[in-house]
Image 1 (cartoon, rainbow, N blue to C red):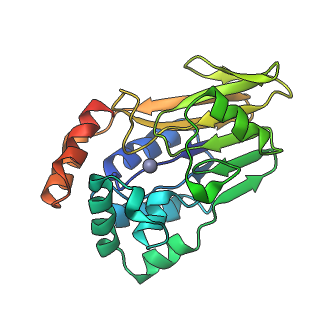
Image 2: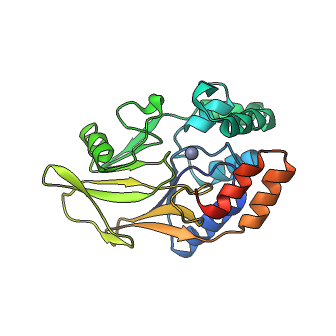
Amino acid sequence: MRLALLSDIHGNLEALGAVVCEGRARGVDAWVCLGDIVGYGANPKACLHAVQELSDEVVLGNHDAAAIGQTDLAYFNPYARRAAEWTAEQLGESERRYLASLPFVLQRDDAFFVHAEPHQPSRWGYVHNRAEAKKALDAIEQRFCFVGHSHCPFVCIERDGGVELLPKGPQPIQPRSRYLANIGSVGQPRDGDAQACFALWDQAAETLELVRCPYDITTTQYKIITAGLPPALAERLALGH
Ligand code: ZN
């Protein structure tokens, strides 16, 4: 089984298309989405429909919740708030119903999937670093924890009472070890690399990998600007932050 994990698509259809192509080329059998399908980008509906086609294994993100009035916009920055209001106007009743049906977490065998922090998924806290990764692993029983939300990807392994960051590239999974992967963002990476990001968990080969793939950023930027969304949301895509 090859499982692809994707998160934080944020209405970026070109990035989502590139990730799906790359996943299919690599023989992905199943997909899990860790939320924030919408918000920021100009194609929220198309991205929602694409995710619905791709997978039944989807959790709710804070921007998804914001688009249906289920989270407070007070802590959103002005660009995010404007985008959330614009996104809410684009969605119809069926899209709102779909988002409202999404759970905060999914637990499948030895894996735990969540948008934000596992111990308080509805508080939308981040897993940015090793200390937060350790806290996340301590909060669950599963061997593998997959999170999104920060848009800054990393993979770490639990070792000697702490966690260690793993280098880039496919990582062999050690027997009985526990892992946390922050799978980054498909549609708005913030780690200085503008390419779309997703994670590939090859359960037969026993590897875990963060995959980057280029996409047509110029088209995405053009759509954001012509939709009347804040131009800063287009500019940041080329910079990867
Ligand atoms: Zn996000």
